[in-house]
Each structure stands twice: as structure tokens, then as C-alpha cells.
Image (tube, rainbow, N blue to C red; front, top):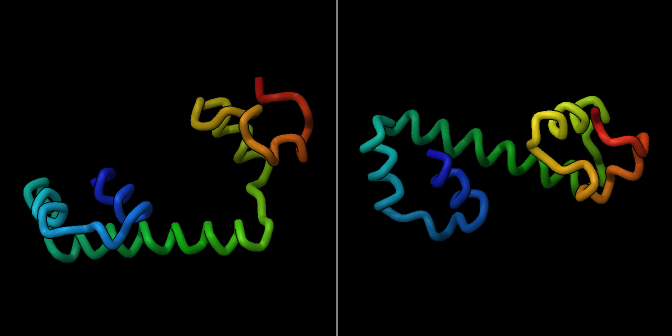
Length: 88
């Protein structure tokens, strides 16, 4: 499923019958596949709107993600807009 979502996000026109077949083989029905596509697409759309308007995530979310190792505090260009100390 995550490979499908990554492909949908990065190159949606490349989605092919084999991608759908893999989802079905993994147990997803048409409704489930539709839900995956819809949720991934809406998430992508909202992120693009926020990014396009210069939005940034709340500091608490950034610190939690950094503490979990999901992102590197120093690699994020907006990290300097917050407290300069990386998460403990």
C-alpha cells in the first residue's frame, strides 16, 4: 500500500493495472483502494496548499517528529525559525 501511495504522490500518471492488482492481492477491495487514493490525495493537496501559502508546522509537532527520528532538525530550512535548540 505504501508503495502505491508513494507512486500516487510522485508520479500519479504512472499508476497501472499492476499497481491495483498488488493492492487487491494484499486484500484491498475497490472501496479500500478508493479510500487509499482519496486519503493520500487529500493529504497531498492540503500539504501543497499550506506550503504554497508559506505555512509551517507547529513547533511541538516538529519537536515530536525529530525526537522520533522522523526528521532531522538541522536539515529543515524552517528549523531556524524556532528555538535554536534541537529537541532533546
